[in-house]
Length: 58
Image (cartoon, rainbow, N blue to C red; front, side, top):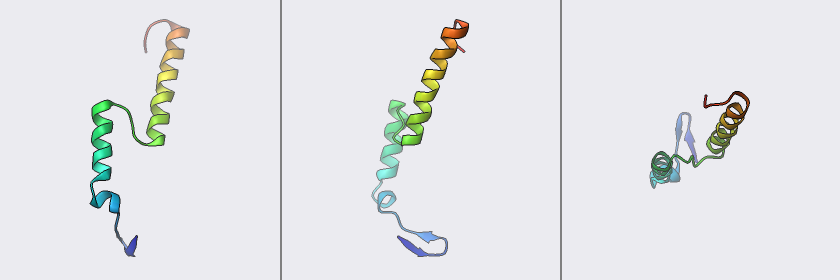
């Protein structure tokens, strides 16, 4: 909800939903956002591909 220039209200932040999601993501190491999950999966496959091509972990 927009309240004016530079001011906004988020019910998720007011009720602590954002902080809860961030805490869970940090503890489990699994991102709760789609972009974060996509990045993590991409890194996983890239590391696996590099280890197959060059032998060993990079």
